[in-house]
Image 1 (tube, rainbow, N blue to C red):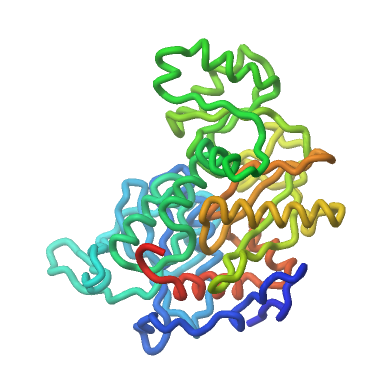
Image 2 (image 1 turned 120 degrees about the horizontal axis):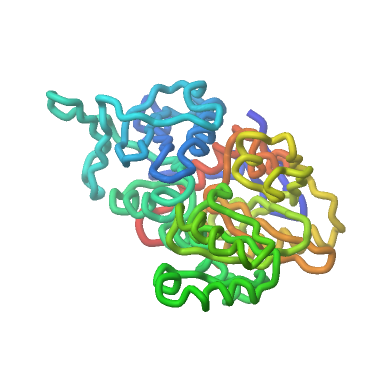
Length: 395
């Protein structure tokens, strides 16, 4: 397995398995291997994206070191055992269907591990799990709900906790927290369901006051689902209706004419500071929508180029990395995050913080770490080790 260099770029802390101390609290429940439950699918519109992420992880995870338990969540919220076959999860259109064997998650630190329940049979113990790798995107998975369940079950897991996950998912409160820490965010307004019902004209005026174009987004969705670029006031209502198909709460952001820059962040070990990757850039070549939408991200990537590292002046690249680490700390993130920016030639502005970014081998997050010196399999290993080092419960 490849590992990162002993000294990461720009003086970052060492990365890779060599930097991780052996976890003292992991059960090593399967012949000395750490047992990892890989959880994916879920109830959100990003269900197929989650499955694609899981396919990449299942292919790359070190089977000599980890005993892997694939668990899918259907769109109805059922937890089921899934065949350990990445080919069934690829293509951007995979769907987890209910199977005979459902997985039950007993709550409490003494609950004794997962249980399989099959129709007409006595429930059978599936065994304990040392760590959960939650690969869900969007609501009901990435937004703190799954993290809260795992906290109640006393199970360690990869990634941010309840608050950081919830704040990272909600673009409104994410911007409130970042601005409260003095970090740069763009102009925006929020349309709540009550405001839309009781004072629609005021909501539309607030959106129009940002100037055109604006981007109308579901406040708590990812993968560019439900987003519209609006160039005229008369198109605002339809764009809000489209966003509300995914979330009743809508955020409207001023369009920023700038380059789209992304930076990957990885938690430090112990009290070490967060580590940051080289910045990358999303370069679009005329997609039909005019912006980085769901189709361009996952289905028709021809108009898309991911440049890593991005061609930026050294001082700007350093500023991007510093702001990415600051945003990670401001939200209280753990494990991993991807911070997205706009750079207009003068200013670096934070657009979003994604606490469970796309994680296929072709996604920007692992690509950025590969360009920084940490391979995809080593990155998976590093995230699991970080989760095992953490205490369960309040931290």
